[in-house]
Image (cartoon, rainbow, N blue to C red; front, side, top):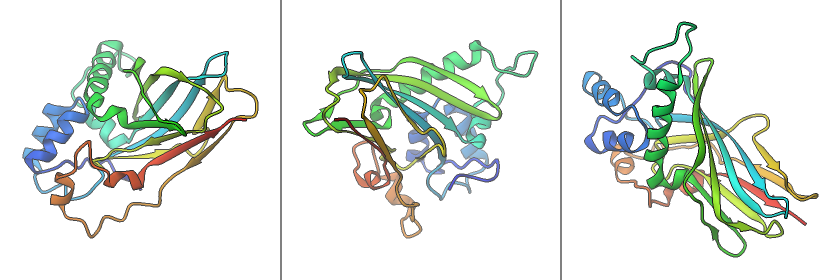
Length: 231
């Protein structure tokens, strides 16, 4: 469940702060927040993302890339933008959003951008993002990026895409409408979107989460999944 109030939770422990450093670009602010309010932070996840995805196909019918659109929760968005200059009309300019997008993308690389793609034959290797940028709409930051495939994949092979954070620091959920699109897919292709049951982590200690890493498999059970089948 996403937060209902503008409250930002961060780890009070050293390793938790390191996780936030790895993931997002508000490192200094998070450190300061943890020092001022060390009592917060005994809950997971800490950041909520509503996402939309698009699978991109070439004219020959092969899958060539995955577009991602991640809308961060309002509390985190406000925290990330705290102290940054607005333009005269109240919006944020490229001088703010471009560097923020660059650091976000760079920080997510070691986590493979939280996206795993595979077909019936093998895992589909993804290149580093292209066409990435941040927008600010309403009270939320939205990260846009495209992950090209190293090699185009034949559409006839079923494709499965999992999106999740193995450290459970970030919670992903699909948008209620238009969560997944197939751009240029061959006729007859269909997509199915599934989300996991709500996380019940009441019996897990903070030490458990502190020991999770990008190679942990525990979070896989909470993966949001896209399955595409083509004739």
